[in-house]
Length: 396
Ligand code: ARG
Image (cartoon, rainbow, N blue to C red; front, side, top):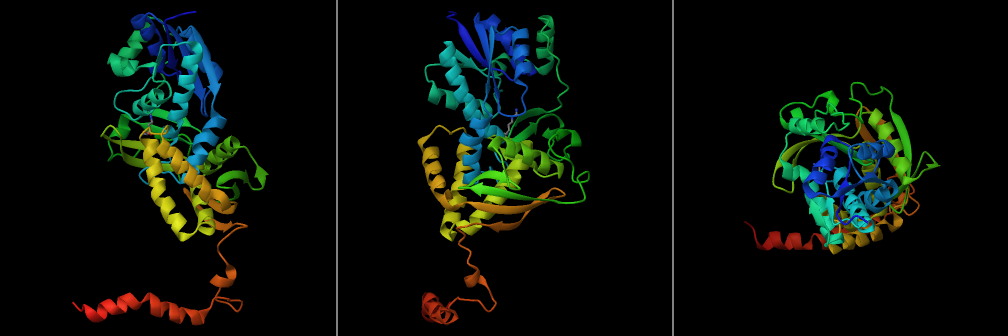
């Protein structure tokens, strides 16, 4: 067994492909790669590429179901959206990637884990904080942060070693998983410039989206979506289905200048069609099924939860405790939500729940009204008492 093994988180892109020979040369180690499918990944093609650039073995794992159940749905139930717009796709994927890396490093007997993050982003923090939590004995190496090569130098490095890589013409730095796509860098770095159409790939522009709306009925069980138009689906299929449908209507585009954990502001383009629809629908179902106080407390916790996820603090008791509270709030968040997808917007047009707190006989203005109008008089008198008192006594 090789004593000198490094496990590399391998995406198949230029950076991590160059990292294979670089790590091998610098550390004299065998490189085992791990590629994780969190959606939109051709595992076998990437595995072949890893071997072609010199990995001694190339592992793969399909993490999609785990991503959905362990990370995306808890975040959906929490209503976690960073800075009001970002559903946290990249950020939610990182702790799961860290967990798979820690597990694989152990089972492979690797002394170090390497990843392809730069020194400016959030992802290095998320991965390293998580790896340190799960596998404190394993070293972390960040070649891209260490080597200081420009993109052109990386290409030269790869050519000098005849690595079979095709440097994709990527004007942007892109990360994607089932929950969404993030694009940054290139011309997007000028926040005054409108993003070019090519920055988007999951969504149609509003101009190109269909003239006719699509109506959908989403079913939720205890806060998790389980069916679309009466067809039960796995979380994974449901999210993919909504990404296609809502993306086709131009839904889920976000253009945001964001506050990174490392102190920089950066301009980010996000596409999250399914997350946009699901958050809207879920929030609407909660308006029927939660009390005013529960909704308000949840709103505050949603922000807290989003910060935790964004800031790489998934593996903390604080996150676990919030999850326990949130899970408890979802006991009656079961029912159906009708949404209209049209020209870049997702609008909730109907909602119903077997345990709805909305009571027609209390709300109605028609004859079947059962609200006690007489009692309102006394209520107002007592409720307004401190207001009257203060205005009588302190008149300035
Ligand atoms: N800014 C986002 C985040 O921190 C997305 C990062 C995406 N990474 C990338 N290489 N494009 O969650």
